[in-house]
Image (cartoon, rainbow, N blue to C red; front, side, top):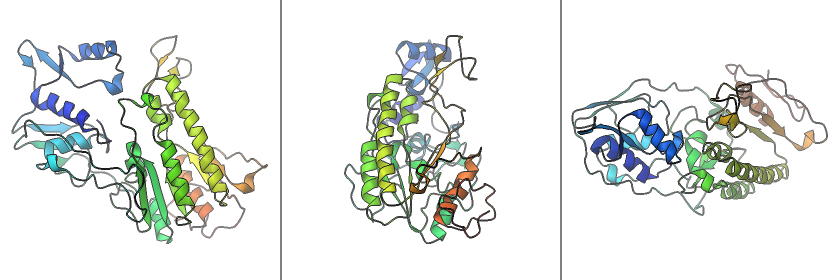
Length: 369
């Protein structure tokens, strides 16, 4: 399920499914037990084949039908490409990366070589749960994606303003495809800058990830006075917490804290406004107990590497608020976009049902609710 061009991982999965070349065990339960004994948590279990005395119980071959049940957009893409693209070995692009106007960035993302398939399947009827990528030639899509009309990025574009979407490569799709309302093509005035994530087995090996480089690049772009709006993904709290390594997660949060301070100081220095929010938690609840969470297995608490269902924050930081802290009322994610538009002085469309949470400078905004 790799999404960051670590093709060696995709190759292992492909070889297991097509050739039966992988760790073998007699049941799914034995596979899990064996992985845990090797120190592998659920997210990092290596491809494993269920076998009997004659070998693998089943592999995928010519003329087979496959239903890929993964409902995500990002993680199934690489494996699906290996099954469906005739010219997979010569794949040159994922159709994302840097906007040419930004110029070459140190450590620019390049398309790594895929891998040579020992066997290419013929006449495969490959069905995906949803559309993983518009250019992947699957036989059918079970549930086509629901396209979101007029997301925040499009409204900013329609106002004639420029925007830059930034992330590490591990989180690229979240600041491009998802943020753009599940659309592959950027809007006029929208550019993206994707900094390569470190190539490590698990991110607890480098909890800082590439955040320092990402914020370095953000500050350079901010100082050009070219963009009116930035969206930046901080990957560390989620990706490092998924490893279950608490000490590494503490280092990840320290990295975020330091770089968020750099970002805030840079933006305030240019009389801008910073909003900090999220759509789910993770690192704040790595040990769970029956009294505090649905996710538990013992009265002593247990490691939880899953996303949490705790409320997430929305912080609004602006020079005009200094010394006069305000508490934002109870709200939801649907209130973030109208609040952003209000702060930018952009008319809020009637179809936006969310409310404005804060008008920082107290100025009337045309069309605001």
